Length: 230
Image (cartoon, rainbow, N blue to C red; front, top):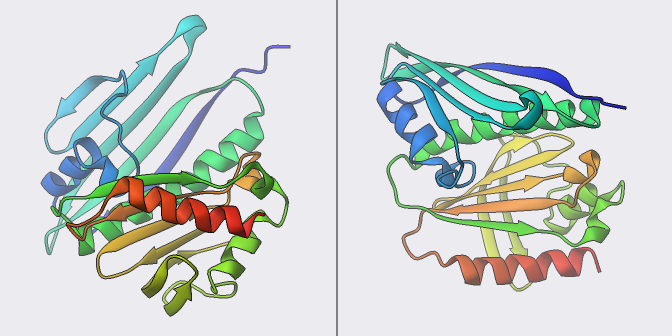
């Protein structure tokens, strides 16, 4: 049975950066707050700098994936972003929509953190996936406990010593049942409880220290995750 259905995810937010800076972040700067998108075969069907950007990918049988950003300036060097992600999910529509909606909220929050604290600084991006055993129902809770942040809420400060990783100190900038965001002086750490959406737990590190090395970061955090889910 063909279960293809269209979807639309809409998110409005005020960001701590001018439309020009937000435009830069959502085009060339995605490794600083989301993940690299420079290899996407997207066609920008609307490009009205710095107020309106639409990127669209299309495939067979009417499939498409489209991102729209509408930006307007606000007082104080800020911008209002109207974001619309639309397209088609082929299978498991409800689960995919729930996962994509929640990821959107977390990614756009991280965009705000980047613009406020690290805008323009060079970044080293690292993506690390936990073992398949992290897909257990308690997978994300186990990670939070291993980090020493089982009950930490947004706005809480943290200062933890992690095996093989050393000291990590800063602020919890995002926290709910599926996602955790940590901000230190030189980095953003993003943790994704994708076990709730049928995938392993994952994380990304956005290192603005100027001395980051992705291979070293992946090895250290990968070892930590292996230990958590052993």
